[in-house]
Amino acid sequence: MQIWHSSKKFSKMGACFIFALAATSALASYSPAEWLNFKAPVAGKPNPIGNYTNGCLIGGEKVPFNGVGYQVVRQEKNRYYAHPEMLQYLQNLGKKLHAAHLPAMLISDVAMPAGGRFVDGHHSHQMGLDVDIWFRMGKLTAKEAYHSTGLANLMANPTTKKMTSDWTNQQETLLKLAASDPHVARIFVNPLIKVHLCQTVKGDRQWLHKIRPWYGHNSHFHVRLSCPKGAQYCHNQAAIPVGDGCDQSLYAWLKPKPKPTKPGKPKPVVIPPPPPLCQLLLDEQAKKIEQLKKNP
Ligand SMILES: [Zn+2]
Image (cartoon, rainbow, N blue to C red; front, side):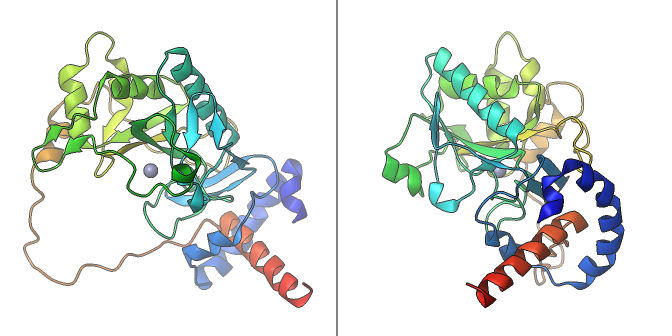
């Protein structure tokens, strides 16, 4: 697909495609499973398109499975493709951990080869700018790194609301190093972990600003990078409120969720259509597969 190989052509033609496809993509039925048709990244100038929960990635790069201070886990999932800035971020973080004599970090889901929506699990990770990193540290065996189900460790007990014995200063240092890179927009952790940090971190607390509470995230944390400079189709999230976030807004997460007043059927999940430029990638890939079937 030639247009993706030329950034000049891409930027000239992009606007036309947006208008042309806005009409067609609304009509086409979209299944997230279509993103599994990409077995390798889409060649071209790195371009994250859309937003973190609905987008795709041109010019992704495979994160090598082993590097200084890190290892990729859950390799069977094929979710280890990253925007080059994310790859650089991970490699730099691994080197910082190594220099601090800490065990290696375990990198879980990044993105699929062309980004897009996963068929299971979380809905972000769509532009190669999100990554899950386990709190458990230290490399696994090659077999465990390939199939890693059940090997992550819980850091806070949801029943007792207390941290488990797996949480040590090493996890705090890992989070601090992860948050201190200027490319990072925010990091999601379980609210109990954020509360623990609010209560225990001494000295420099500036990095707590980027640590945000979210459901789950008890055995891994989720790093989100800002849109790279010049990425014209990438949409950042709204900025985080000022301060360290150790306030009422945090403690509200610990209150039990109010029960719905009218019990009824849960609302069906509505999956939005992908941005038009991402739909174009899907259409081109479907055409290629169709041609291969005709002329194997
Ligand atoms: Zn995640």
